[in-house]
Length: 512
Ligand SMILES: Nc1nc2c(ncn2[C@@H]2O[C@H](COP(=O)(O)OP(=O)(O)OP(=O)(O)O)[C@@H](O)[C@H]2O)c(=O)[nH]1
Ligand SMILES: [Mg+2]
Image (cartoon, rainbow, N blue to C red; front, side, top):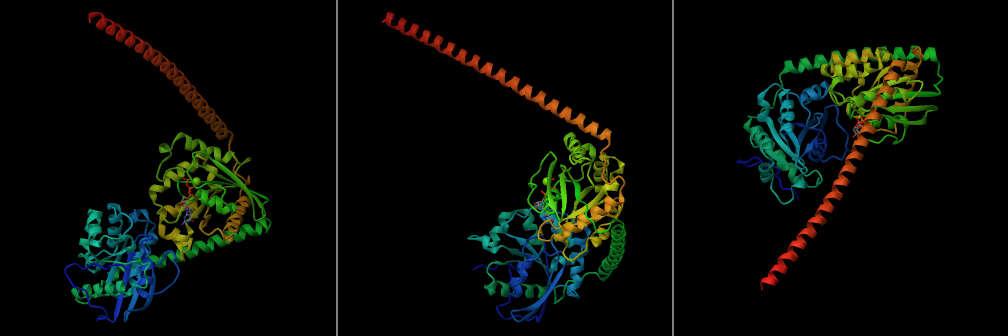
């Protein structure tokens, strides 16, 4: 059984003696911190795990108390607000409006089994800061999850051993904390004790809830509605574009499609390649060279080339010669040229002004015409949940809108974790066929200058590799020769010493 601790210096209400008849709880925490599991523990429900992209409100009864629990979507544990998409920050603030007039408690959910670093603290502090009120801290409590990992130590000792970042947080929450073992849902005492601690806190706060500034909420709601409208307009525009091209092309699929995947590192290029081809063709590990795979997909012969990614935010000058060389080579690997370049971008991160130049510079290596053949391929569709990709584009702001427009308003969303959804691939292929129909020539022709540059670069790389190989071999021969010499010298030294030794012995015998 998990021991429940917390609220140092004050007794929590005894079991079953709750005075509040209604309790509003808001859960905040990074992704996979155990928010949904904790809600199931509180309400004794058994719903399966789903990733929460939007805030979720669940009502139920727990220990005789009417409980409203709201879960705000999480963030990557090391991501500051700026690193995450705007939608995530918006949802966090709007989550408070789901428990009007405000939550009695904000539970900051933290896993016990992973180190709580300073970066984690900053990320959490920034989310609390979104509500623009210091008073949120007097309504906050740390809820540790993974209580089963505590084993034979106490929570107090864990906090002590974790270091300054966690201690700061616990102190900021007025030393209020509690632990859940979400694997042991039958242990109702852990829930009883949590509700007791919340009641005690509410008493200290004179029964009040944490009320978010209504103007702030209103501003967010207005912004949300504006983005929803713009998202709808974009969607209508895209549908019209698709209808127009369908009219021109008919329903005939292209017999062959050639695709190049480009984007920054870890953007999901290999995973997207696998989703498109319908099997694990690409290894999910970094390669410094292009990889080409092909398969029959929905009646078409599809070739996919993955170009090595550049570091996010690296301008062209920062990228290595090899990366640039391979980027250019990717287009020549599917002769006579790719029908489309899919620029892979993740929807679980932000896309700001700082990201535009790196993307532009790397793409324009192919020449300015490249934009006619480029389409944005968003990955991590699972993180969007119910939110449409159009809403993500609108809420993310001008930089992403600029990029999408630069690609002629062509974009598609993939969830690489849902390989069973073949519709997402067929839709993508149809959209690529639309691009083929619009473009003349139908594929991106690699210009002779670029080809020449690629060949020249390749020759230089090969020459350099040969030179390095020769150098290594030469060094090895010299080393071998030196080793031989050292051995000879050692043998010589051995016999000299032996001679000396025999001479000394001889002298000693003579003297005796
Ligand atoms: N949840 C989720 N994870 C994804 C998705 N797509 C990719 N990933 C994960 O993101 C990580 C990076 O994916 P990769 O496909 O290797 O990315 P990449 O762009 O090929 O990476 P490099 O080749 O190293 O630049 C892997 O852990 C994938 O499992 C997605 O749609 N949803
Ligand atoms: Mg890859």
